[in-house]
Length: 92
Image 1 (tube, rainbow, N blue to C red):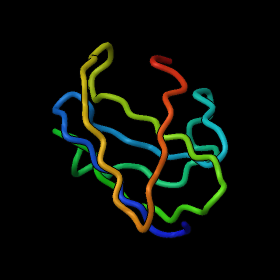
Image 2 (image 1 turned 135 degrees about the horizontal axis):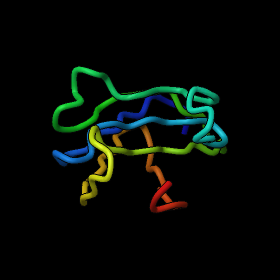
Image 3 (image 1 turned 60 degrees about the vertical axis):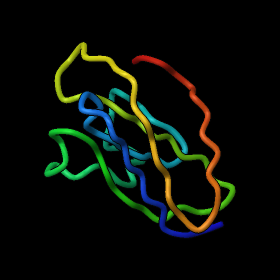
């Protein structure tokens, strides 16, 4: 269902979130960027919202503030309908 969806994490290591439409190119990270986490949230978690359309592919990229930091995290997606998430890559 089309609508505004909110993405929230809850781990102290995972502090940035970015969502892209269609694909993500690490060599050009602003290409296809729809939304990103607020810099004010960078210390402990990320939180942002964006308008998503049905039958589109979106790529959610989560990362840390410091390089080489790893950890588990929970992701909460809130919106007008269910969202299916599929892991496509563990590391870049």
